[in-house]
Amino acid sequence: WNRVFPGDRGADGRPVVKLFVTGNHDLDAWWTKGDEAKLSQTLFSYGDNRREVWERLFHEEYLPIWKKTVKGYTFVGAQWPRPQPPVEAWFREHADELRGRKPFFYVQHAHPKGTCNLGLISYDDGTATRALTPFPNAVAITGHSHQTLTDESSVWQGAFTSINAGCLRSGDNDRWNMGYDSIYPFWHKKRKENRMRKLPGEEGRCGLLVDVFDDHLIVHRRSFAYDQPIGEDWCLALPSAPGGPFDPKRQVRESAGPVFAPEAKVEVVRCAVAPKEIAGPALAGKPCVWLKIPHPQTPKPGSRVYDFEVVLRVGGKDVLRRLVLANGFNVPEAQANRVTNCLFGADEVPAAGEVSFAVTPRNAFGIAGRTILAN
Image 1 (cartoon, rainbow, N blue to C red):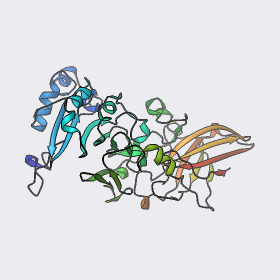
Image 2: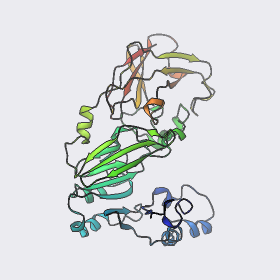
Image 3: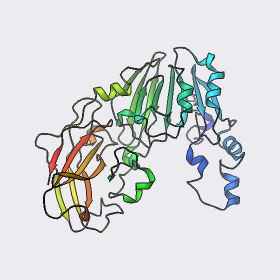
Image 4: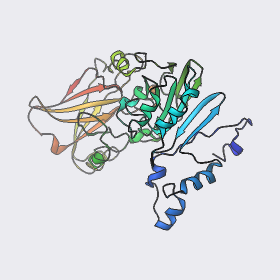
């Protein structure tokens, strides 16, 4: 930051404002190793260190909850909850100055519970959701979900507005060819079951540019890897109101499943050794059954393929399911026309008998398109 914005100013000399908050890795020390004495001197998670480290790095006071004004708009930030900042009490105390139609922005690491990305991935215990619900002019910009901005559920409008800020390395989404439980994410308990190599994260680098007006936002989703839009712009009317275009129930109702072309076919190949370039730890060097899935079409905006449900059927019965992220799920759609690979272990698939695979494309909301059968 200090190299790119020396003195907190851009190349044109205009001031640039730091709107930083801590996340779980800042406090949980997952990213470093060392002896206790060294860690106690350097990590945010040790006592009052976070104040000293913050002030040394950013040249400003460390506050559990901060408020700044940028070009007449209010920004509020809350640090990672260890201990939990008094978010609800803070918003009650400042309610009079935040109420109104003009938007204000709230920043924390985790999505407010029950909002964007289908409300499934959050470490927020509901504190932020309760605090922001009285403010339809509130716009939460948060993360932690590891979801790419091609995921159309990254925006939510209900009692307030909630936006996924995006993940700069979105290749580590855990729906990548894992066992299927009826709902994701699978997270750490399933990691060793990975049958596929991780998707490369470099391609998925993306972020938001937001045009701010008193009565609406225009959110531009950009691929930094390709310097292109990674999806259609979102125009968000403010204040938020349930039932609008970005109400999750309406988003699901109005979206459509991806569509395989009429001539599309899934190729099934039995391999003596799993392809080294795509096999993960569970299948490396082992025999496998390799499915090559063609890329489906997008029937309407916001309905591009996000993943595939792949079902192994034996004797007409469903015996095993996979969820497989679409190859190119995290890049601009023009670059996403790619074959998606799915691997099954040879010991999972009978060598004879009535064996088939049902492959169904789904959009980010889980809405399914036409299923292809292959054997």
